Length: 64
Image (cartoon, rainbow, N blue to C red; front, side, top):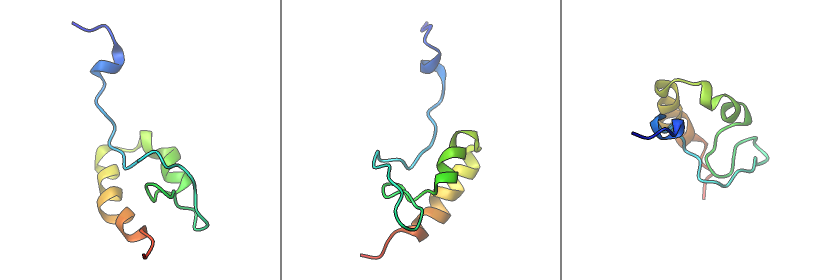
């Protein structure tokens, strides 16, 4: 049995890809979350995170 508390903790759902820089619109260039969403992410429920990832973030992708 592992005594590492991190090993027992479930992974937090996240769209983060490690490109963490806010653009002129205030969205992260990597995941499209706002600074406020990033700050609150760990405190959100899985349902709230999933809703944001499925419904909100896709609408923020810049046009190419």
